[in-house]
Amino acid sequence: MILAVLFPRFALAVAAGGRDALLQGPVAVAPEPGREQMLGEVSAGAEAFGVHDGMRMGEALARCPGLALIPPDPAGVEEAWEAAIARLEAAGAEVETARPGVAFLDSTGLRRLHGGSVEGVVSAVRRALVRPARIGGGPSRFCAAAAASRARARRAELVHGGEEGARAYLAPLPVALLRGHERTAALPDALDLLGVRTLGELAALPRAAVADRFGAAGLLALDLAQGRDRPLRTRRPGERLEERLELPESASGSALEQALGLLIDRLLARRERRGRTLRAAVLAATLVEGGTWRERVCFREALADADRMRLVLVPKLALLPAPADALRLSVERFGEAAADQRPLVDEAAAVRNERLREAVCQARAAAGPDAALRVLSVDPDSRVPERRTLLTPFE
View 1: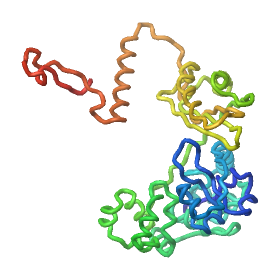
View 2: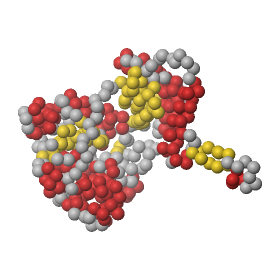
View 3: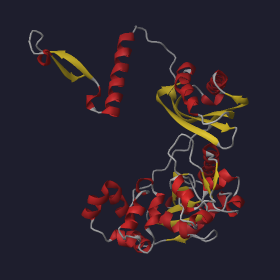
View 4: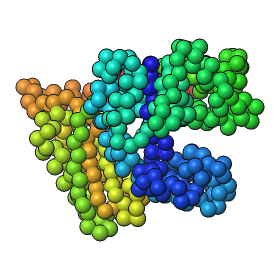
Protein backbone atom coordinates (compact mmCIF):
# COMPACT_ATOMS: atom_id res chain seq x y z
CA MET A 1 0.00 0.00 0.00
CA ILE A 2 1.19 3.50 -0.87
CA LEU A 3 1.00 6.11 1.88
CA ALA A 4 0.56 9.82 1.22
CA VAL A 5 1.76 12.35 3.80
CA LEU A 6 -0.05 15.67 3.39
CA PHE A 7 0.73 18.96 5.11
CA PRO A 8 -2.24 21.22 4.25
CA ARG A 9 -1.16 24.66 3.03
CA PHE A 10 2.49 23.96 3.79
CA ALA A 11 3.97 26.75 1.65
CA LEU A 12 1.42 29.26 2.95
CA ALA A 13 2.14 28.40 6.58
CA VAL A 14 5.90 28.75 6.08
CA ALA A 15 5.58 32.06 4.23
CA ALA A 16 3.18 33.43 6.88
CA GLY A 17 5.45 32.41 9.76
CA GLY A 18 3.07 29.84 11.27
CA ARG A 19 -0.42 28.42 10.98
CA ASP A 20 -1.89 30.95 13.44
CA ALA A 21 -1.66 33.67 10.78
CA LEU A 22 -4.00 31.67 8.53
CA LEU A 23 -6.91 32.16 10.96
CA GLN A 24 -6.95 35.96 10.79
CA GLY A 25 -8.71 36.23 7.42
CA PRO A 26 -8.45 35.35 3.75
CA VAL A 27 -4.76 35.19 2.84
CA ALA A 28 -2.77 33.81 -0.11
CA VAL A 29 0.80 33.57 -1.28
CA ALA A 30 1.52 36.33 -3.80
CA PRO A 31 2.93 35.44 -7.24
CA GLU A 32 6.70 35.30 -7.48
CA PRO A 33 8.17 38.46 -9.08
CA GLY A 34 9.01 38.02 -12.72
CA ARG A 35 6.78 34.99 -13.15
CA GLU A 36 3.19 34.47 -14.29
CA GLN A 37 0.71 36.27 -12.06
CA MET A 38 -0.79 33.17 -10.47
CA LEU A 39 -1.53 32.86 -6.76
CA GLY A 40 0.23 30.26 -4.65
CA GLU A 41 -1.54 28.42 -1.84
CA VAL A 42 -4.62 30.07 -0.32
CA SER A 43 -6.23 29.79 3.12
CA ALA A 44 -9.61 28.30 3.96
CA GLY A 45 -11.03 31.81 4.36
CA ALA A 46 -10.02 32.66 0.80
CA GLU A 47 -11.51 29.41 -0.51
CA ALA A 48 -14.86 30.48 0.97
CA PHE A 49 -14.87 33.35 -1.59
CA GLY A 50 -14.15 30.97 -4.48
CA VAL A 51 -10.39 31.63 -4.61
CA HIS A 52 -8.18 28.59 -5.22
CA ASP A 53 -4.53 27.77 -5.81
CA GLY A 54 -3.19 28.85 -9.18
CA MET A 55 -5.92 31.44 -9.84
CA ARG A 56 -4.93 34.65 -11.59
CA MET A 57 -4.41 37.47 -9.13
CA GLY A 58 -6.84 39.86 -10.85
CA GLU A 59 -9.68 37.36 -10.72
CA ALA A 60 -8.88 36.46 -7.11
CA LEU A 61 -8.98 40.13 -5.99
CA ALA A 62 -12.25 40.61 -7.86
CA ARG A 63 -13.82 37.72 -5.96
CA CYS A 64 -12.27 38.64 -2.61
CA PRO A 65 -11.30 42.36 -2.35
CA GLY A 66 -10.06 41.84 1.21
CA LEU A 67 -7.57 39.14 0.21
CA ALA A 68 -4.22 39.66 1.97
CA LEU A 69 -1.14 38.73 -0.07
CA ILE A 70 1.94 37.29 1.64
CA PRO A 71 5.37 37.59 -0.02
CA PRO A 72 6.48 34.19 -1.34
CA ASP A 73 9.26 32.38 0.51
CA PRO A 74 10.47 29.63 -1.88
CA ALA A 75 13.84 29.25 -0.16
CA GLY A 76 12.28 28.88 3.28
CA VAL A 77 9.68 26.43 1.97
CA GLU A 78 12.38 24.31 0.33
CA GLU A 79 14.48 24.27 3.50
CA ALA A 80 11.56 23.31 5.75
CA TRP A 81 10.40 20.62 3.30
CA GLU A 82 13.89 19.17 2.97
CA ALA A 83 14.05 18.84 6.76
CA ALA A 84 10.70 16.99 6.82
CA ILE A 85 11.78 14.60 4.04
CA ALA A 86 15.08 13.93 5.83
CA ARG A 87 13.15 12.84 8.93
CA LEU A 88 11.07 10.41 6.89
CA GLU A 89 14.19 8.97 5.27
CA ALA A 90 15.80 8.63 8.69
CA ALA A 91 12.89 6.35 9.64
CA GLY A 92 13.80 4.02 6.74
CA ALA A 93 11.33 5.24 4.11
CA GLU A 94 12.07 5.77 0.42
CA VAL A 95 10.21 8.96 -0.44
CA GLU A 96 8.83 10.51 -3.62
CA THR A 97 7.93 14.17 -3.37
CA ALA A 98 5.87 15.90 -6.05
CA ARG A 99 5.79 19.34 -4.42
CA PRO A 100 6.40 20.80 -0.94
CA GLY A 101 3.69 19.53 1.37
CA VAL A 102 2.97 16.18 -0.32
CA ALA A 103 5.15 13.06 0.00
CA PHE A 104 4.56 9.43 -1.00
CA LEU A 105 6.14 6.25 0.34
CA ASP A 106 5.59 2.52 -0.05
CA SER A 107 4.65 0.81 3.21
CA THR A 108 5.49 -2.71 1.96
CA GLY A 109 9.17 -2.60 2.87
CA LEU A 110 8.53 -0.92 6.23
CA ARG A 111 6.01 -3.33 7.72
CA ARG A 112 8.60 -5.74 9.11
CA LEU A 113 10.35 -2.82 10.79
CA HIS A 114 7.20 -1.45 12.44
CA GLY A 115 5.00 -4.26 13.72
CA GLY A 116 4.07 -5.98 10.46
CA SER A 117 1.03 -3.82 9.67
CA VAL A 118 0.19 -0.64 7.82
CA GLU A 119 -1.03 0.92 11.06
CA GLY A 120 2.43 0.40 12.58
CA VAL A 121 4.02 2.15 9.62
CA VAL A 122 1.56 5.05 10.00
CA SER A 123 2.47 5.40 13.68
CA ALA A 124 6.18 5.40 12.83
CA VAL A 125 5.64 8.12 10.22
CA ARG A 126 3.80 10.27 12.75
CA ARG A 127 6.63 9.88 15.27
CA ALA A 128 9.20 10.87 12.65
CA LEU A 129 7.42 14.11 11.76
CA VAL A 130 7.47 17.23 13.91
CA ARG A 131 4.52 18.97 12.28
CA PRO A 132 1.04 17.38 12.39
CA ALA A 133 0.21 15.80 9.05
CA ARG A 134 -2.69 14.01 7.39
CA ILE A 135 -1.91 10.49 6.23
CA GLY A 136 -3.82 8.47 3.66
CA GLY A 137 -3.19 5.13 2.03
CA GLY A 138 -4.33 3.41 -1.13
CA PRO A 139 -3.34 1.20 -4.06
CA SER A 140 -2.17 4.20 -6.14
CA ARG A 141 -0.54 7.58 -5.56
CA PHE A 142 -3.63 9.54 -6.56
CA CYS A 143 -5.92 7.44 -4.39
CA ALA A 144 -3.58 7.83 -1.42
CA ALA A 145 -3.45 11.60 -1.90
CA ALA A 146 -7.26 11.76 -2.09
CA ALA A 147 -7.53 9.71 1.10
CA ALA A 148 -5.02 12.00 2.84
CA SER A 149 -7.09 15.05 1.90
CA ARG A 150 -10.08 13.50 3.72
CA ALA A 151 -8.14 12.12 6.69
CA ARG A 152 -8.19 13.55 10.18
CA ALA A 153 -5.10 14.93 11.88
CA ARG A 154 -4.93 11.92 14.24
CA ARG A 155 -6.65 9.22 12.18
CA ALA A 156 -5.37 7.92 8.88
CA GLU A 157 -7.70 7.14 5.96
CA LEU A 158 -6.78 3.79 4.35
CA VAL A 159 -8.32 2.38 1.14
CA HIS A 160 -8.15 -1.37 0.49
CA GLY A 161 -9.28 -3.55 -2.39
CA GLY A 162 -6.78 -2.89 -5.16
CA GLU A 163 -7.72 -1.03 -8.32
CA GLU A 164 -11.45 -1.74 -7.96
CA GLY A 165 -11.43 -0.50 -4.38
CA ALA A 166 -9.63 2.68 -5.43
CA ARG A 167 -12.16 3.32 -8.21
CA ALA A 168 -15.09 2.84 -5.85
CA TYR A 169 -13.51 5.17 -3.27
CA LEU A 170 -12.75 7.90 -5.81
CA ALA A 171 -16.15 7.79 -7.55
CA PRO A 172 -18.05 10.25 -5.28
CA LEU A 173 -15.10 12.66 -4.88
CA PRO A 174 -15.00 15.97 -6.83
CA VAL A 175 -12.83 16.44 -9.93
CA ALA A 176 -11.18 19.36 -8.11
CA LEU A 177 -8.73 16.79 -6.71
CA LEU A 178 -7.09 16.75 -10.14
CA ARG A 179 -5.63 20.19 -9.35
CA GLY A 180 -3.10 18.47 -7.11
CA HIS A 181 -1.48 16.82 -10.15
CA GLU A 182 0.75 19.03 -12.28
CA ARG A 183 -0.39 17.71 -15.68
CA THR A 184 -4.13 17.73 -14.88
CA ALA A 185 -4.31 20.97 -12.87
CA ALA A 186 -6.15 22.85 -15.64
CA LEU A 187 -8.85 20.21 -16.26
CA PRO A 188 -11.31 20.69 -13.35
CA ASP A 189 -12.67 24.02 -14.64
CA ALA A 190 -13.26 22.62 -18.13
CA LEU A 191 -14.85 19.45 -16.75
CA ASP A 192 -17.15 21.50 -14.53
CA LEU A 193 -18.37 23.48 -17.56
CA LEU A 194 -19.18 20.16 -19.27
CA GLY A 195 -21.17 18.97 -16.25
CA VAL A 196 -18.59 16.41 -15.06
CA ARG A 197 -18.29 17.10 -11.36
CA THR A 198 -17.16 13.80 -9.78
CA LEU A 199 -14.37 11.39 -10.55
CA GLY A 200 -16.93 8.62 -11.02
CA GLU A 201 -18.60 10.56 -13.82
CA LEU A 202 -15.17 11.13 -15.39
CA ALA A 203 -14.26 7.43 -15.12
CA ALA A 204 -17.49 6.48 -16.96
CA LEU A 205 -16.69 8.59 -20.03
CA PRO A 206 -15.50 6.85 -23.23
CA ARG A 207 -11.75 6.87 -23.55
CA ALA A 208 -11.82 7.99 -27.18
CA ALA A 209 -14.03 10.98 -26.37
CA VAL A 210 -11.77 12.09 -23.52
CA ALA A 211 -8.68 11.78 -25.72
CA ASP A 212 -10.35 13.78 -28.51
CA ARG A 213 -11.35 16.61 -26.14
CA PHE A 214 -8.43 16.84 -23.69
CA GLY A 215 -5.54 14.91 -25.25
CA ALA A 216 -2.84 13.29 -23.11
CA ALA A 217 -3.84 15.22 -19.98
CA GLY A 218 -7.40 13.91 -20.27
CA LEU A 219 -6.22 10.30 -20.66
CA LEU A 220 -4.05 10.70 -17.56
CA ALA A 221 -7.01 12.11 -15.61
CA LEU A 222 -9.15 9.18 -16.78
CA ASP A 223 -6.55 6.67 -15.58
CA LEU A 224 -6.31 8.42 -12.21
CA ALA A 225 -10.10 8.40 -11.78
CA GLN A 226 -10.16 4.66 -12.60
CA GLY A 227 -7.58 3.85 -9.92
CA ARG A 228 -4.52 3.48 -12.17
CA ASP A 229 -1.29 5.37 -11.66
CA ARG A 230 2.43 5.01 -12.31
CA PRO A 231 4.78 3.38 -9.75
CA LEU A 232 6.61 5.48 -7.20
CA ARG A 233 9.81 7.21 -8.29
CA THR A 234 11.63 7.59 -5.02
CA ARG A 235 14.49 10.01 -4.74
CA ARG A 236 18.03 9.14 -3.76
CA PRO A 237 18.99 10.75 -0.43
CA GLY A 238 21.63 13.37 -1.16
CA GLU A 239 24.25 15.28 0.75
CA ARG A 240 23.53 18.92 1.48
CA LEU A 241 26.33 21.46 0.99
CA GLU A 242 25.61 25.16 1.41
CA GLU A 243 27.32 28.52 1.87
CA ARG A 244 25.62 31.70 3.08
CA LEU A 245 26.79 35.30 3.15
CA GLU A 246 25.18 38.33 4.81
CA LEU A 247 25.21 41.37 2.53
CA PRO A 248 25.53 45.09 3.32
CA GLU A 249 22.38 47.13 2.94
CA SER A 250 21.05 47.28 -0.64
CA ALA A 251 23.99 45.41 -2.14
CA SER A 252 23.75 45.30 -5.92
CA GLY A 253 25.82 45.44 -9.08
CA SER A 254 29.50 44.62 -8.75
CA ALA A 255 29.22 44.16 -4.97
CA LEU A 256 26.63 41.44 -5.49
CA GLU A 257 28.81 39.76 -8.14
CA GLN A 258 31.80 39.80 -5.78
CA ALA A 259 29.68 38.25 -3.03
CA LEU A 260 28.61 35.49 -5.40
CA GLY A 261 32.22 34.88 -6.41
CA LEU A 262 33.16 34.55 -2.75
CA LEU A 263 30.35 32.02 -2.20
CA ILE A 264 31.56 29.97 -5.18
CA ASP A 265 35.13 29.94 -3.87
CA ARG A 266 33.97 28.90 -0.40
CA LEU A 267 31.75 26.15 -1.77
CA LEU A 268 34.50 24.67 -3.93
CA ALA A 269 36.94 24.81 -1.02
CA ARG A 270 34.74 22.79 1.33
CA ARG A 271 36.31 19.55 2.48
CA GLU A 272 32.97 17.75 2.23
CA ARG A 273 33.02 18.16 -1.57
CA ARG A 274 35.84 15.57 -1.74
CA GLY A 275 36.93 16.61 -5.23
CA ARG A 276 33.53 16.00 -6.80
CA THR A 277 32.10 18.15 -9.55
CA LEU A 278 28.80 20.06 -9.35
CA ARG A 279 25.92 19.11 -11.64
CA ALA A 280 23.13 21.35 -10.28
CA ALA A 281 23.14 24.25 -7.82
CA VAL A 282 20.57 26.52 -6.19
CA LEU A 283 21.08 30.26 -5.84
CA ALA A 284 18.81 31.89 -3.24
CA ALA A 285 18.48 35.30 -1.62
CA THR A 286 16.65 36.88 1.30
CA LEU A 287 15.02 40.08 0.07
CA VAL A 288 15.03 43.42 1.89
CA GLU A 289 11.28 43.90 1.33
CA GLY A 290 10.45 40.48 2.79
CA GLY A 291 10.25 37.01 1.34
CA THR A 292 12.92 35.12 -0.55
CA TRP A 293 14.03 34.41 -4.11
CA ARG A 294 15.28 31.08 -5.44
CA GLU A 295 16.70 29.99 -8.80
CA ARG A 296 17.78 26.46 -9.74
CA VAL A 297 20.67 26.15 -12.19
CA CYS A 298 21.63 22.92 -13.97
CA PHE A 299 25.05 23.11 -15.59
CA ARG A 300 25.45 21.81 -19.13
CA GLU A 301 28.18 19.48 -17.87
CA ALA A 302 29.42 18.64 -14.38
CA LEU A 303 32.15 21.12 -13.42
CA ALA A 304 34.31 22.36 -10.56
CA ASP A 305 35.78 25.46 -12.21
CA ALA A 306 35.07 28.72 -10.36
CA ASP A 307 35.35 30.88 -13.50
CA ARG A 308 32.88 28.79 -15.49
CA MET A 309 30.46 28.75 -12.56
CA ARG A 310 30.61 32.57 -12.40
CA LEU A 311 29.78 32.78 -16.10
CA VAL A 312 26.63 30.77 -15.49
CA LEU A 313 25.50 32.15 -12.13
CA VAL A 314 26.28 35.88 -12.40
CA PRO A 315 23.58 36.52 -15.09
CA LYS A 316 21.01 34.99 -12.72
CA LEU A 317 21.53 37.92 -10.33
CA ALA A 318 19.73 40.14 -12.83
CA LEU A 319 16.54 38.21 -12.01
CA LEU A 320 16.52 39.44 -8.40
CA PRO A 321 13.22 41.32 -7.91
CA ALA A 322 14.57 43.49 -5.05
CA PRO A 323 17.77 44.22 -3.12
CA ALA A 324 19.00 41.31 -1.03
CA ASP A 325 19.99 41.03 2.63
CA ALA A 326 21.67 37.64 2.27
CA LEU A 327 22.87 35.42 -0.54
CA ARG A 328 23.00 31.62 -0.41
CA LEU A 329 24.50 29.03 -2.74
CA SER A 330 23.89 25.31 -2.26
CA VAL A 331 24.65 22.11 -4.15
CA GLU A 332 21.59 20.21 -5.34
CA ARG A 333 23.38 17.37 -7.11
CA PHE A 334 26.99 16.27 -7.36
CA GLY A 335 28.75 14.85 -10.40
CA GLU A 336 31.75 12.60 -10.72
CA ALA A 337 35.13 13.41 -9.24
CA ALA A 338 37.06 16.04 -11.18
CA ALA A 339 40.05 14.81 -13.19
CA ASP A 340 43.00 17.24 -13.11
CA GLN A 341 45.35 15.16 -15.31
CA ARG A 342 46.03 16.74 -18.72
CA PRO A 343 46.20 14.66 -21.95
CA LEU A 344 49.66 13.69 -23.21
CA VAL A 345 48.78 14.77 -26.78
CA ASP A 346 47.26 18.10 -27.73
CA GLU A 347 43.63 17.34 -28.53
CA ALA A 348 42.37 20.90 -28.89
CA ALA A 349 40.86 20.28 -32.34
CA ALA A 350 39.06 17.13 -31.18
CA VAL A 351 37.73 18.90 -28.10
CA ARG A 352 36.56 21.85 -30.21
CA ASN A 353 34.78 19.56 -32.65
CA GLU A 354 33.12 17.68 -29.83
CA ARG A 355 31.86 20.91 -28.28
CA LEU A 356 30.60 22.09 -31.67
CA ARG A 357 28.77 18.78 -32.17
CA GLU A 358 27.21 19.09 -28.70
CA ALA A 359 26.10 22.68 -29.43
CA VAL A 360 24.45 21.56 -32.68
CA CYS A 361 22.58 18.79 -30.84
CA GLN A 362 21.33 21.24 -28.22
CA ALA A 363 20.20 23.73 -30.88
CA ARG A 364 18.25 21.01 -32.69
CA ALA A 365 16.69 19.81 -29.45
CA ALA A 366 15.53 23.35 -28.66
CA ALA A 367 14.45 24.62 -32.12
CA GLY A 368 13.93 21.53 -34.25
CA PRO A 369 15.95 19.68 -36.91
CA ASP A 370 16.37 22.80 -39.10
CA ALA A 371 18.12 24.81 -36.39
CA ALA A 372 21.64 24.02 -37.66
CA LEU A 373 22.19 23.94 -41.44
CA ARG A 374 25.19 24.35 -43.72
CA VAL A 375 25.53 25.73 -47.24
CA LEU A 376 26.42 23.07 -49.82
CA SER A 377 27.67 24.15 -53.23
CA VAL A 378 25.71 22.19 -55.89
CA ASP A 379 26.03 23.99 -59.24
CA PRO A 380 28.20 27.11 -58.92
CA ASP A 381 28.06 27.86 -62.70
CA SER A 382 24.29 27.93 -62.88
CA ARG A 383 22.58 31.16 -63.96
CA VAL A 384 19.76 30.52 -61.49
CA PRO A 385 20.89 31.63 -58.00
CA GLU A 386 18.64 29.10 -56.24
CA ARG A 387 20.47 26.23 -57.98
CA ARG A 388 23.99 27.25 -57.02
CA THR A 389 23.76 26.32 -53.33
CA LEU A 390 21.61 24.15 -51.11
CA LEU A 391 20.93 24.12 -47.38
CA THR A 392 21.62 20.73 -45.80
CA PRO A 393 21.77 19.49 -42.20
CA PHE A 394 25.05 20.32 -40.48
CA GLU A 395 27.11 17.25 -39.65
